[in-house]
Image (cartoon, rainbow, N blue to C red):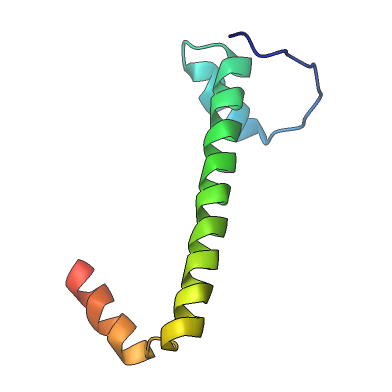
Length: 75
């Protein structure tokens, strides 16, 4: 399945363009992939926030001390 393309104009910081141009892949392909990944990450974060809100409503908020304890274990 081919997705329709639409030409748009964006301005990017010079260092980003240089880094993208250093890769052998086409610039448009790289930008397309980066935007898709960013949108997917944004969607996952929204879903996570909704889940955490529901859990907080059902069970109450987790104490900062408990959060700090488990963050320490992850390091």
